[in-house]
Image 1: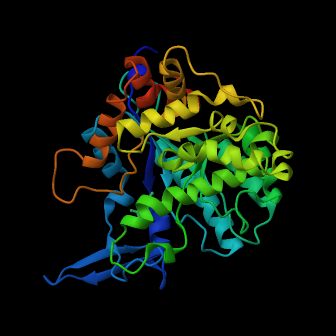
Image 2: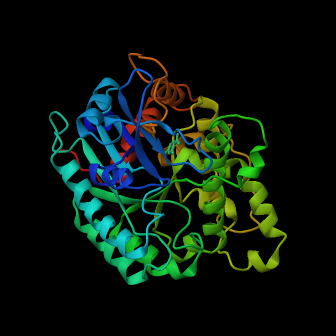
Length: 391
Ligand code: 5CU
């Protein structure tokens, strides 16, 4: 058990399973994988997934679907365990019947991908676990979503569900989804909330900035909006044991949570719907540590760590007597290391990926976190959240 507490666990790492990649290859419009010939006369595969992405897409290869590549990447960065999720845009673009059958097949594929992986040396733990998929598309029936939750819960290596922000067309604050939240809560699965659509592309202006604005700002704002809508709809009041993990450290939500609380306080109709001050709900959530900076991680843990002070709406938080160090330490218990592999590859051959090294250095550099907090963020929190029992 002491060894397990030192494991490095990556909870934000993606795959396009071979069945999904074949599906994308058969498509004529985005999302799709297509082949083109290079100036050297070779064939190369390209991936086109984002809205407004140039039509030549980006390079795609075995790092997206080959499990051996995932394990090699893990070895290169000393990652012991990965909790792997399908990458966006999941099944969002499919008709309901296809989404439903493909979700079930991909869930079984992911279970096999994980269950046949090697074990962590000296441990009963596998090196790979996964987040399953729900057929979250318009016109799917809620009973079929619940059925898929139950399928995922029955697959021993699947510990959660990755989902985008659209729900079944009306977002995640749609009350129709209540039986789905209830089934997920009951099964103890972790929801990994991940963006794909960003915000209205008109916000990016006319200058050519590649993917920088949609990825750096659009993705996190999408998560911010979706989570805020869930808070406002009372999802976390109705399902207090629902475990939701936010991609990219919750986007702008930690920075905006006091402003959100104030806006709610000034809107009696909304305020009367909620059991708690908005800031309280941040202490119920989990945040990946994919923020690339120590100061940002420290700030997020401060905000999570103070949440308990805001159980009552209108409560005013007394300043911490220890300068906030205890609060910062306690917030760290809901933060978890991630890489976003295979996205953000290095632009040239390097020993380690910059994106991974930066996230590890950020954890190491958080002022006020001791070795215990850092190790918990690197792996211990993930073992606890996903119920991964060591020998
Ligand atoms: O680079 C990107 O486009 C992405 C993406 O689509 N999804 C993701 O998780 N990270 C980066």
